[in-house]
Length: 403
Image (tube, rainbow, N blue to C red; front, top):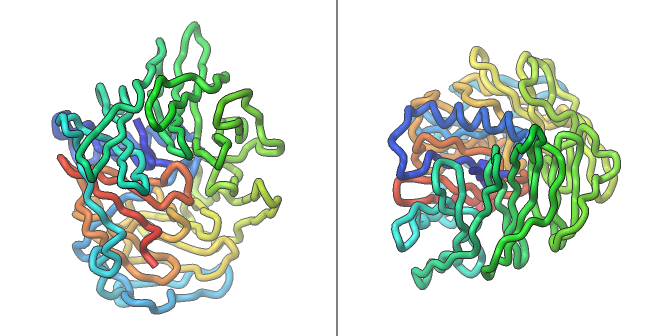
């Protein structure tokens, strides 16, 4: 199903199954928006909940300052207009950071479409096949060097399923996911896992609820968000434990959690206005310029857009505020991987995914063509990888390689 974008989706939500008929360009954006609201789960972030979607955008007409110039800086709480006259030639990501973009197989050797989950350091691509749209049926391990694929596990689909295997996540020697179903009027969420080397999947936990926001693996612990807070349990399974004091919080960039979590927020609202670090106890609040748009904040940066004005970006401490007046706003604005914002120089008709680097004020053209998909937040904002699918090829964009 997901990923999200990520977390998504690893984040991302892919296009409809490659075997499906072509769909209108705007359909998947609507599907993703509805899906994020449903899972949000975000919700988050985010969301990876959430939902902060980052739609790719195209190079046509794309512009903003190039090179390493510092971004325009405003006084605290103010937004400095950045007009088209301030924009320069976009940096081509493939040329400047060639290891940031990589082509991967979009199908298994047997011809089935493969929806990627993770690329491991040894050159193994972990992915899922779907029996139908967003309905994973089996997990696979694909040795790219040898060109061989082997099944990791079959994915169980319980009676009454509402949300199929989601937030499929690899950590250590395990792969885990969550799903939900409704039987006799009762909504249940279950977390499942399997050995990465292969073997039968088993249920690790079950609890009342309709959905999970973000699910991730933190060392030997599984962490996830629900509508009533953030939970954790051992990777080996056990009784879920709610983290004290997390009511109303969602995962932003683990171990940072944020509140309030909002879906369908009103103008002027700030999603994740308040942050708390689960490990250190540190807290941060957002102090932003007045703006008649809905703000979504990451750990350091916040963003909001208005189709009639443009997109605002500002540090949560009130510094470095900018208003990108040349931006043709798309889906709700959100900074991903703590640094990058979707940029829409030609609106929905743009052809490639373009990102605005809020740290440097640079526009980055990834060169990756859009194929009716939305690039969204990963399972967790610290996750830099996004898989973008074409007909037979998947492109991996690794934001951690952009320096």
